[in-house]
Image (tube, rainbow, N blue to C red):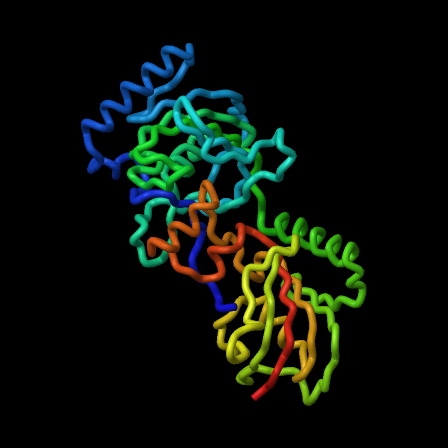
Length: 329
């Protein structure tokens, strides 16, 4: 339940964040892949624009659409595939799924960067060219995509990538807060959690068992011990210490846990059980994301990213914690 300090993770290779920084890739491989892309474009009759070592075509133009600034929260649909082969990952409007939400402009870090703030160059480098409402298809040598990273059955080594990206929207913090509050309210109603207390930062607390309910709620400086299970609102569990040898402990006001968790626990008395539900901005916010998401486990195993809870949670996800406050010191 520790606080996660990293930013967005959308990485899949040992690479740098913009075109000018990719000069160390094999010149021979890059030239060969460029020729392959050019032949593919010719064979398919595609009208493409060349930008350095990559090519792209405009599927849908919207020159009057909003342009992007670093740090914008954006929503995209996308399909990432081998140049003339299998789809690696996709989230499409036609599937009925919501678009992927993440923070734009976090490229420029390698996998070894200590702040764990990485971005696959094809995403930020490509999306930077787009306006809201536009859809582009990019044709990328491996140096601008997954580089030499591979995962059997998912990402081939040195893969040339065809990436179709639709820039759906830019979302403000206020809009995100309002949207997630509606999601949480719907969840409370659907799960008959009608006795929810509305707290600061959009957090809700539902007392489920007063237990012994000894003393007063904890305040700044108190050390608390507790048992908990954390889930997404769809019920998927991402963390639990129910089977641990000892309860989890932290100090109120010590900024060692996510904000929403501390806000909820601060409503509880010793021996009490309850449910804390919080929006993403009081939890892990942009969290960590990879394209495709299943490579996150592989990246953790290889030591490229930490094994913290944030890597297990999709970006901008409201969370639920079922908590028992064991003791207050």
